[in-house]
Amino acid sequence: MPDRGSFQINEDLIYLNHAAVAPWPRVTRDAVHAFAEQNASRGAADYPVWTEVERRVRQRLARLINAPSPDDIALLKSTSEGLSIIAHGLPWSQGDNVVTFAQEFPSNRIIWESLARLGVETRLIDLAGGESALLAACDRRTRLVSTSSVQYTSGFRIDLERIGDFCRPRGILLCVDAIQSLGALRFDVAACQADFVVADGHKWMLGPEGVALFYARPVVREHLRLNQFGWHMVENLGEFDATEWSPASSARRFECGSPNMLGIHALDASLGLIEAEGMEGIERAVLDNTSHLMDLVRGCARLHLQSDPARPRRSGIVTFRIAGTTPQSAWRELMNRGVICAPRGGGVRFSPHYHTPTAELGRAVEIASTLR
Ligand SMILES: Cc1ncc(COP(=O)(O)O)c(C=O)c1O
Image (tube, rainbow, N blue to C red):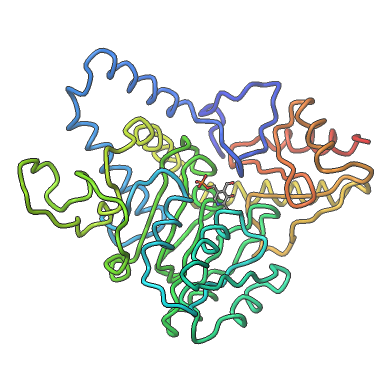
């Protein structure tokens, strides 16, 4: 049973927007308070302790995706930054192509499209065709397939293992934007054979904006050309008098300057809570909430479920249309009534987390069903 006491969300709000930005757990709020106090009273006198927290976050993130080592994890500022490092680090040739879904979040399209000036084509495949259409669009010039683990509009969960099984033997790189699943659903980078995994911490991981996980498979990492440089990305960190340098062999090579220590302290606390709850239980609770929401929506004649109800396709996101409303008007009215959600994909998107009380889902759907 999830511990709802870990959160302090206002009782007049029904918070169904974890697919956008999550409310912090109490432990995260406390960690930020404590860090602020420490900064104000002692400055960076305890920097070695902060470095320990940074090390722990890398370990937690490595465990979260089942990465072989914390050395494979870089801490960046956003998913978009991670995707850009991949796109502008790979050695492309004119005529290469990238294959992705047309309905992806803009960062997972714009960044690949920015390679057009190098003669790289971005193939946008209709999500309606699923993985089959995505894979059918690959040819001998396909260098990379990029997909979200869970689509941000409808919550459609992608069969990553199927894509990985296709890509790896053909030498096609697989890049996964996992922001809509990490912290909600279990993830195994070895099982899905992803070469890259990127995800900011402010959604299902319950952290702040501005600290993102970046994983690159070690053999591929070495082939990414670096475009950002500084004191923090060198092998011999802290040797300020050295005139010779080389990039760190670990994923720290992608972190050019001072880390976001405040964000790291916050994310450490959030991930600590997630580990204490356990990903298996969190995933079960998230999917139970989704099942319940889907039943409620399907039980109401004025609501039309847009998310795919097939079990392997479910995630933490449920999207539906409300008859007689536009997504924008319905969303504004829901927000006015304290139901925090988002207009997405031609409908209203509800994204409760594991700790969202079941009764609140019923109340939110009841409010939605009365909108005109
Ligand atoms: C699938 C997906 N990718 C990326 C992002 C945001 O990325 P960033 O961390 O660059 O802000 C979002 C935010 O809504 C998203 O849904």
